[in-house]
Length: 275
Image 1 (cartoon, rainbow, N blue to C red):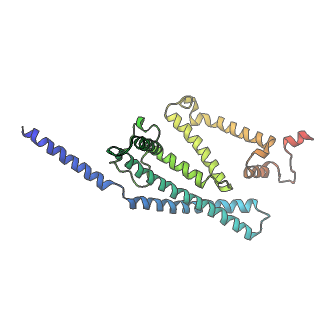
Image 2: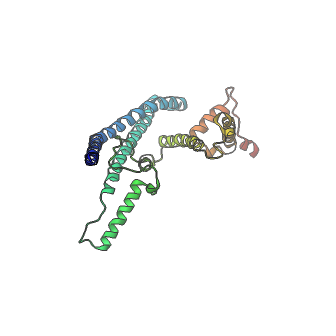
Image 3: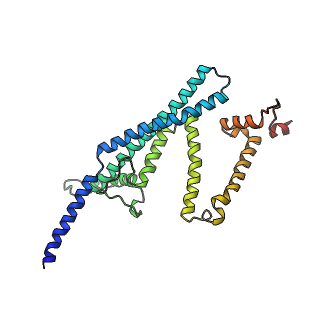
């Protein structure tokens, strides 16, 4: 009898402790602001750190005809563009994550019920809008995911509360910041494309997806074949269709394969065959 009488009190105490823990661990708005500012500063600093040496080497290596002052202007322009874009993207990405985090907590709390004077059509429209917003914020398959969003559980500042949030914030930021074509933006897109391809192959191998999970296709075994295919393809394109290669890559390959050290400039295979 005593155990039965004290059981509700124990449950209430545990519930109170859990609620107090959730309240104390809830990420504050200032933490999110700090994460946004940190992303802004980190993106700008890293852009300068990574672009200035690269722009310096490439400008002085391939910009022989440019005057010294013009070279410095080109270096400053490339470094500023890279830094501003990275800072803008990091800031926008963190803002979108914080916004979706707030919306994902608010959506389950507003059921839309209890409006006695509301019309049937307005209720249906409200539910439709809520469903669309919930699908955008939580993902189209959020109900079938193992990891569901719990409004009472706090997520650290600057961290997506749902994996779908990272994709959506990255896609919006990529369209706004990196969607404008420039040599700097295009170079980063190509860099990320190659890294994403390798990462997806690794992920497929970890998930046991065939044929990537086969032992014969491990990195040590498949790397020589990958190198053979990549180098064979780029050399064929360079000799037959050099216009489809990126100008910087074409200039580098011209430096190696066309302008020889002994004053002999060879012609491409297509030019030789045309004669």
